[in-house]
Length: 115
Length: 114
Image (cartoon, rainbow over all chains, first blue to last red; front, top):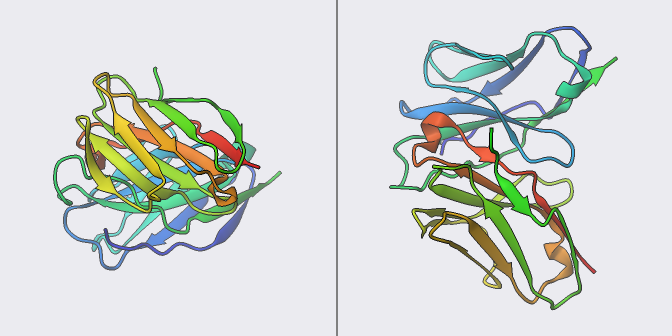
């Protein structure tokens, strides 16, 4: 899977929007962009994913650059419960063969939310 | 909605003992993945199973083994435990099209080796 680059940490004030960037300049045409987050002492939690078009769900929005070399996870109003490590992961739907679809975690962004 | 169930939540073992961790995937998910997360580390992929067959292997030590059963639950068997095996162990499940539809993780088993 192609690699991603994220800032080590970011801070946000509570109730304000947060834009978490991710660079993936070597992304292939069949790579899905996944975002997961991990709260302290919990398992990773799915946030959102997309291929080419921007995506919205109840948790967040995913803005994907036209050339797909970068994306941004948008939390519209940060709450204290959003403090977590956010991982941007590329996952090739055509990789390796049946069942070989594990996510490979890199260094995510630790988001701190200030009350 | 049913989630991925892992048991036990916490486990304390002594060096050189064995441990068995269990994972029950979401119904109709046919693929299970095991991850290890040491203190301050990111989750590292250990092994995965698709339709009860091992599908991929990551950084799993030879002392560890795993299998997926006919009901799709999976067990991670760890022998000759070492202090460095102390970690959070997560299980995740997906349909075979995980890349398209996402993955669901369990809450993890915290293993402490003393």
